[in-house]
Structures are given as C-alpha cells and as structure tokens.
Length: 110
Image 1: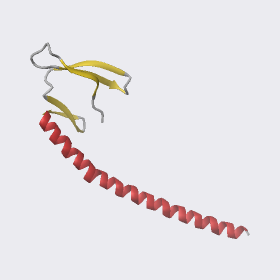
Image 2: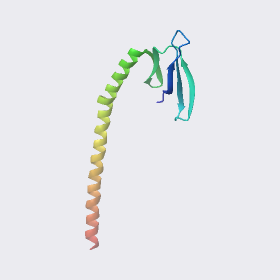
Image 3: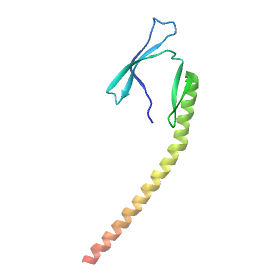
Image 4: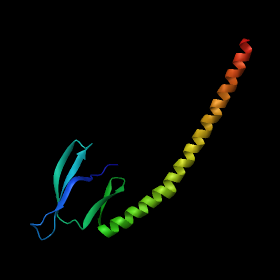
C-alpha cells in the first residue's frame, strides 16, 4: 500500500491567517516532487488499509497510529516470527536429511 509522504522543506506560510502549510511531496521513489499546500494542517488523511484513507485530527491520528503500531508489533509480527521459525526448522531438518543421504551415497560408492 502506498501513501504520499511529505518530504523536503516544510514551512508555515505567514501570509495566510489559516496557517497553511507548504511542503514538497514525493511523487515516487524520491525522483519527482511537487509543491503542495495544505489548507488545514490540523487535520490529515491517514491510510487505514485496503485503499481507504480517513481524515483525522492530529490527536486522533497519533492515537490511531500508536494503536496500529502496537497491533502490528504484538500480533502480526509475532505471528510472522513464528512462521519464519517453523520454516527455518524445516530447512534445518531437510539439510540434515540431505547430509545423511549424501553420507549413505558416499558409503555405497566405496
């Protein structure tokens, strides 16, 4: 999933009373950038998954992101680590069997 991220120089525009935010937005792979003006920097859109974006206040976004990081760290990552350990054990067992078969083959050749 992709989301636009602001990068480069960011500064508040002092000419507007709304306190617009000017930023450079990476259009992809840090090759092309576009100037962006955020009319209300007190609200942002957050990619919540499945291609959906939700507008949050900054406080809501921080709360959502912290919960999402916790979920990914404690639930998703833990499950993936368990799967990786299972695959690693299967590979170790396979290598041991292949070594044993090679040893038997070498003994038969003598």
